[in-house]
Length: 335
Image (cartoon, rainbow, N blue to C red; front, side):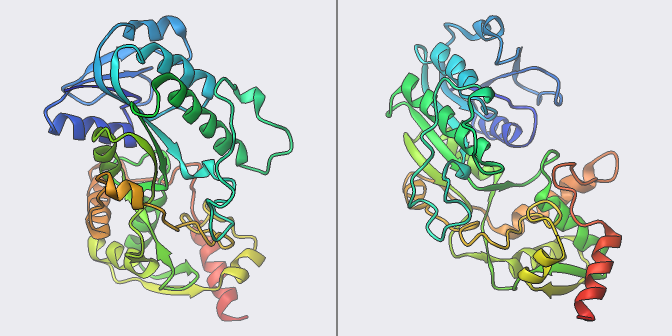
């Protein structure tokens, strides 16, 4: 099996490469060579997907499966999909649950359908007046259209991912932040209630599903009705060997204090009833499986400890600063 990974050096792309190699595939990686070294055992084609000349290095090459992990602008995805369509067998595009304008604010986030998008759009074409952050989902929807137009419905998979976690998450860092916070011990501020649902998808499980080459459009969140916030924190404690004291704090109170959802407290959205909702029936029928949450947490912790320097929060998910957390806990107890 010949596999092309567009991306392939960090996090999800790296997981796809590792899973493909483990399956005995011949793997080619196409990226700029700037984010991180490519894994051993692959062919590296250096290029920028926004450059037609760079993409032409792949013209005429036959790949059984293409996995596109880093398509964010429809016009760019159109170039790669059009160029590879004549000679590739299957094109798996990693999209996002954010293509639904109802996510995460609506109880049934799929009721409104997905954004219409534009398969030839650039960032400059995002419609005016969209809510903050909605441009990402609108652009991803256009990327999906680009792939479907080039490959047809039977030769592509559109994978609408939820919260992706796991080892090598050096860019987003939502799960590593919680593991690190538990590892520091003491009083840990936790939003909401212990029984609140939590549904995370390990990058390696998503990679395996993408390489399975099932055609269709799939929501690929974490497992439905399996895990909770309590389970997540218990797994963090078991992995790190630290018995922290979890202080559960009311959502509305945190919002009133100006705590930023998803960034200051990663994986938390106070006003998002569907943030971890799951419509994964089609993906499960097509072969999606999830490893235990505890295994993902443990493997992520081991990766964090393997880094040459201590793990640090990512700029886009900084988490609560220690002093800020102490202030909030003091105010919560004295309210």
